[in-house]
View 1 (cartoon, one colour):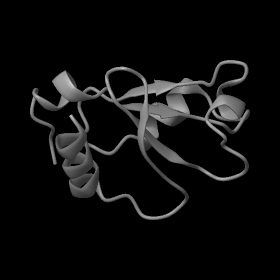
View 2 (spheres, rainbow, N blue to C red; view 1 turned 60 degrees about the horizontal axis):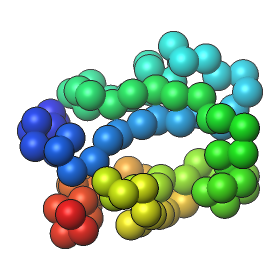
View 3 (tube, rainbow, N blue to C red; view 1 turned 90 degrees about the vertical axis):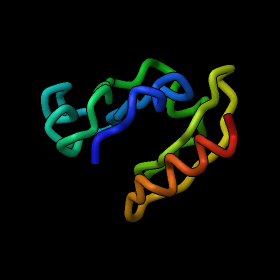
Length: 90
């Protein structure tokens, strides 16, 4: 699936690693083909605390004001649901 350009008018997509052994290149390789515009990133000091990420991977959606509009823990990734949430909340 490729994102329409309008997706990025509503949200930015970052894949933030929390494993200290992962590099930006490792994270970039985890972004599925067609997910154009997604940015690999390493967490800043305090990010995991600020977003209450404890042990497992967590998906967090922020609106354009930086407010959390959705979060879910470890599990399958349903991109259609993600887009639906962004469309509904924006």
